[in-house]
Length: 428
Image 1 (cartoon, rainbow, N blue to C red):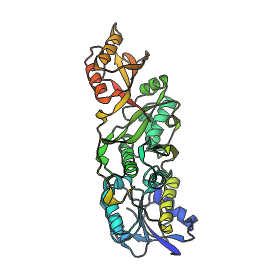
Image 2: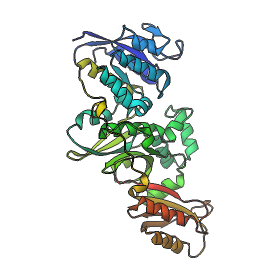
Image 3: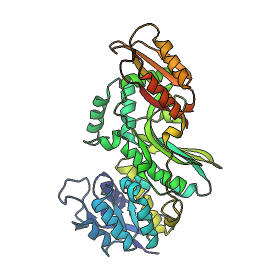
Image 4: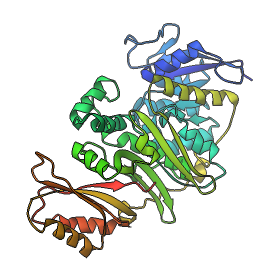
């Protein structure tokens, strides 16, 4: 047993600073009895203002040099980004047979299969608990706790920024732009929020979870992605009137045909556990064939929770455990076989803005019926200043291709003022 494990940390942002503080406060956090020490650090700027003192550690200008350095036993990559220096440094460490711990979801979602093969060929652990749901152990649940079961689906709220925005819009009656600005001021959203509000951050995470759940190569291009930028207060209010809340849900399901993977705004019933997940919290459902349904919820980001997840991976390295990077060895990862959302069966929420004239409701119902789609619930609710009459309906279960055909026919109705707003209804 190694009495002391030396850690090289590349990336000194929120998580990197949190990790250095954690190690300094409790170097013996591993149950093995060994001690962890930071020996080298690397970041874009040596002189940037930071919450932690980095002067005791050797500085590296190049993360690849830090990754290769003989002065550390474990390389921790917290730079971020799918390519560039982050990828080069991780590859360098793995080629040297050095354990790598990363919080980089974009890197794993984009290059996970190749990195897994490199890690396993060189006998080097590659761990990434902090890449998904911060300090909430979603990765460990799928990689360790579920190995004796067959996972059928995973679904949840994986982006705290979007969840905060939707929660605050509903609670305060403010619009998307105002709440986004507040989220940026609070540090919940970046100055360029596209990765979060566009659904791409959640797509990286569900790609990783799908690979762990189903033993397939992580394939980001297989995800259908829709963000929350177009969600309006009217949608939230009308959904609530029908007994739902709108959440950005990331999901992946396995079937005989392949894997369906989506990130999209979704209506969840008020009595569903996801409806009660507010603010910046994350939550995940895992459906196993034998175990049934598991639900976990917790902090999805932040210095403390994410640094704790990085430390947990370092502790696993110190304990000497050996597992495949994903559910199966890299050589056995199955190709990702995408199933088009159009081939699925589902229910939708449809919000229409129509002219106030006779026969409109009859024409909507007739158009849907002619296409083979039946209405489950219907609500007509005049809203002052809406510029027309908002009508909202939900459908019964139907093939999505049939629903899409029906919506296309509805778009030609003369009474329709603007294109219909369509939001999926959760089946989880």
